[in-house]
Image 1 (tube, one colour):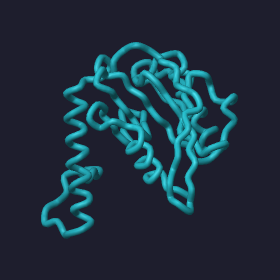
Image 2: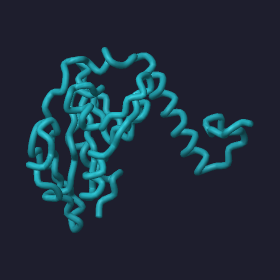
Image 3: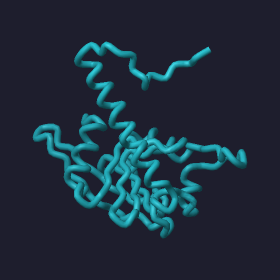
Image 4: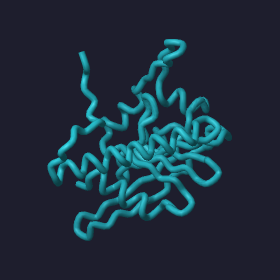
Amino acid sequence: MIKIEELVHAYIHTHCDFEKELVLTNYFQADWEADILIIDAEGISHEIEIKLSKSDFKNDFKKSYLNKDTGEKFLKHDKISCGDYVCNTFSFLLPMGMVDPNTIPEHCGIIEFYHNVDTWETEFYFIRSPKKLHEDSYWKLNDKDLFIRKMALNLLQRKMEIKGKHEELIFRNPFDIKNKK
């Protein structure tokens, strides 16, 4: 079975234009996480959620979030379908034939993949294009400067994490979050 990291690598290197698009993987924003987030030059954003099992897919529709300001609880896909979502479009990336496309809400795009374990090639099939949820640019809904600073911090954290795994660091890692009492 293909690992999720290998699937992400195969997808972004065959379907993303790194000269024209900002491509992030496992991107966290508040209580929301995107497996793949693509933002084009105009700020139009596309979230791709990867599901490798039927149970994981079904659980995505049970995810709920709490509005910090109002205390209101809402389901993820209710928020997406009504256009009250940060991304302009949303798609599922699924193993070929895992889910009947007719059971997937109309607002969701569907991308299926087939991974050949003998040749290690992965093919992607665009079953349904996602519906545009709203017209707002990602940058209208998010502070671009803060976004860039968070990306730079994340890159530095990952560099230090990798460096720490390969050699002994002689300073305390300031990115380790510990409860101070």
